[in-house]
Amino acid sequence: MEAPPVSVMPVTGGSINMMEYLLQGSVLDQALESLLHRLRGLCDNMEPEIFTDHELVYLLKGQQGNPFILRARHSLSHPAVPWHLRYLGQPEVGDKSRHALVRNCLDVSASHSLPDFLNEMGFRLDHEFVAHGHVFRRGALKVVVSKLSRVLVPGNTENTERLSLSYLVELSVLAPAGQDNVSEDIRSFAEQLKPLVHLEKIDPSKQRH
Image 1: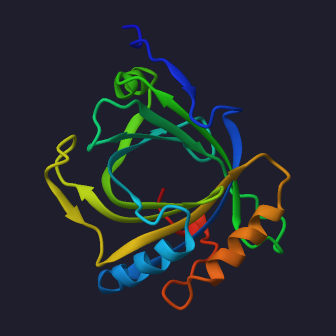
Image 2 (image 1 turned 90 degrees about the horizontal axis):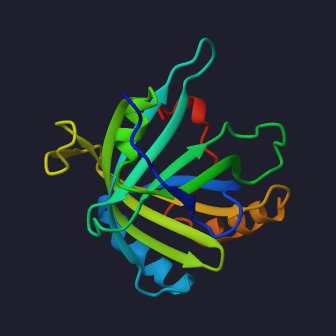
Image 3 (image 1 turned 180 degrees about the horizontal axis):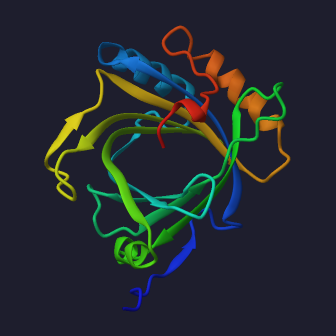
């Protein structure tokens, strides 16, 4: 059986091959409003973008080594917009002086046949979740504050369970390789969010993708 056709295009308008500079942290539910108030004062958009997304994580196991992981995400609040397909590479751990985690990032928009295409290509759905939250921007910096919920019945985004009593906070920048000054910009911004949230480089080997 042939894989269904799927069309893709870069999300960022230029090269789809970029580096992601990332810091992560979390805040308890009761501290959310204080953090949002701080972000409104620091960011370009006083009112954040609100999103509710469904993300599916696919694995393709090879002969050896770690499986190849792709992430397919689509908006539940705007079902007509294209899907997003994302690949996140292994973090570059050589330079300990970097203030942010750095990893290769390929991000494309795709047509709605994306899940069927991945299944026919041999990928296996590992897990899925729903993310609901807020997006703030300051220049190239992006701050995502989201509540994650596991999907209890495969494909049924109405039947979910919250993963924790906290919100995930991610501060990131996408930039071409070699622009390590970006990590200093991220560190400086993260300092302004203390003590509400402490953002740090998270060791991906201690996380489940």
